[in-house]
Image (cartoon, rainbow over all chains, first blue to last red; front, side, top):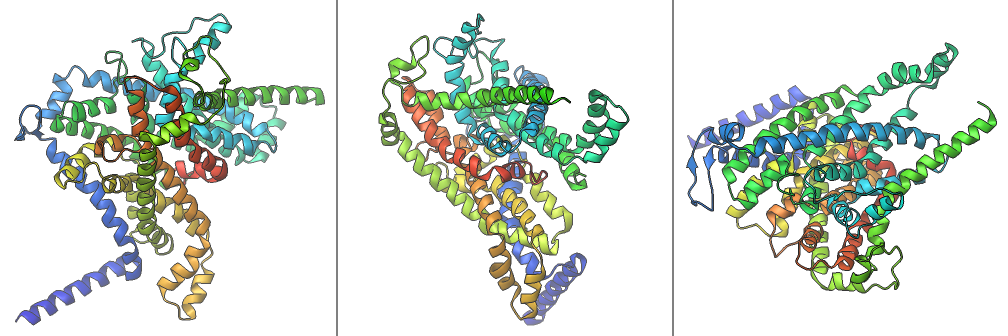
Length: 311
Length: 275
C-alpha cells in the first residue's frame, strides 16, 4: 500500500517536472542552477515582507509592553490621520527627490556636453568624476560635516573671500534640508553626467548633419532631436535617482541627525526613529510598508522601461 | 567655426571641466589633508590647507582604536556576502542567459529586488535575527546584504554571458562533456573578467552600506561606516582620526573607481547603460 502511494507521488512529481520543462523548454539542469539563488532571494525578501506585513497589524511597543496586540489597520490609519510627523517627513523626502533629480539632470547634462568635447583625457576625467559616486555616503557625510562647518569649515571661508556671508549650513532650520540636498547633488551629479555622456555618444551623426543642412538652430536641434532620442535613457536615469534619493538616510544620520528640530527628518529617517529609537516596531513596519508601495510604483515603471529595451 | 573660435571654445570647455573636477574632488582632498592635521590645525581660522607636519600618527591611532576592528569586520562582511552572492548568482546568471529559465518573469523579479528600500527590510530583519539570536553577528549582515548583492551579480554577470559565443560550449557538449563541465570549464572561464568585476562592485556595495549595519549590529560587530558615524557622534570629536579612518574607508573604493570606470555605470544602472 505504502509503496504504491510513494510510487504514485514519484510519478506525480516526475509528471510535474516534465510539465514545467515542457512549458519553459529549459532543461532540469537549468532549473537546478537557479534554485539556490531563488531560495536565497525568497528567504531574504518574501519572508521579511510577510513578517513585517503581519507586524504592521500589531501594536508592539517594547517601551510600553513586550506583548504585541492586534490592532488591524490602525497603524496605517494613524500614519495618515493621527501622526503630525509622518506627512511632513514624507514631504521632505519628496522635496529632496524633486529638486535633487531636476538639478542633477540639468547640471549632469551640461557636464556631459563638456565631457564629450574632451578628446583623449575624457577617460581620465570620467574616472576621477566617479570618485564621489563610489565612496560611502557616510564618508560623504563626514566630508559634509567638515566642509559645511560654519566656524572653521573651508566653504564659508572661501565664500568670505568673495565677500559672501555663508549660512549656518547644518544648524539652521531653513537651510539644513538644502544642505542635505547639496550633498546629494555633489555625490550624484557625476553619475548622471557620465550616463548622459555615454548616451550622447550613441546618437546617430547623420541626423544632426541633416538638421544642420536644414538650418536648424542649436536649441531647435537639442529640443527636437537630442531630447527625444535620449528620452528612454533619461527616464531610466531619473527613476534610478528618484528611488535612491527617496531612500536617503546615511547623510542625514551623520550630518544632522534629522535636526535641527525635525527640519531634515525624511520618511526613511522617521522610520528609523520609530523603529530603533522609540521601539514601536508595528508602527515602523506600517510606515515602511507605505514607503515600499511608493518605491514599488517607481520600480515597476523602471523595470518596464528596461524590459522594453532602451532603443 | 573659425579655428580661433574653436580654440576659444575648447578653452572654455576646459574651464568648465576643471571647475567641475575641483568641485567634485576638493572635499575628498580636504578630508585627506585633515587626516594629517593636529586638532589645533583643524579648528584654526582661516582654515589651514597644508598640515605643518605630515605623519601617519592619526592612521595608527585610528587602526589601533575602534578602526582596526571595524576594518576587519568590514572585510569579513563584505567578502562573505560577495562570496555567497557569486556562488549562487553566477550559475543563475548562466542559466537565465543560456536557457531563459523562468522566462522574463524570473529575471525581472530578481531585478526588482535590487531596488528594495533597505529601510523596509531593516525592521523585519531586526526582529527576525533577534528571534534567532543572530543580532550583532557577521552572519546577520552577510545574509542581509544578499538582498542587493545576489540580484546585482545575476544581472551584471548575465550581461557578460549574453555576450559570449555559444559555439565553444556546444562543441564541448557534442564531444561528450556534461552541461556542468561546459559551464565551469568554458563559460565561467571566458566570463572571468565580468565575474571579477561583479565581485569587486558587490564588495564595494557591502563595504559602503550603513543603514542595515546600524540596525543589525551593536558592539560585537561594527563595520567602518558605523564606526565612522560613532566617532562623529562622540563627545570629543577627534577630526584627525576621523579623517584617517575615512581615508581608509574610501581608498580601496577610489582605486576601484579608477580601474573599473568602464563598468561602474553599467553596474549602477542594472546593466541598462553599457557605457
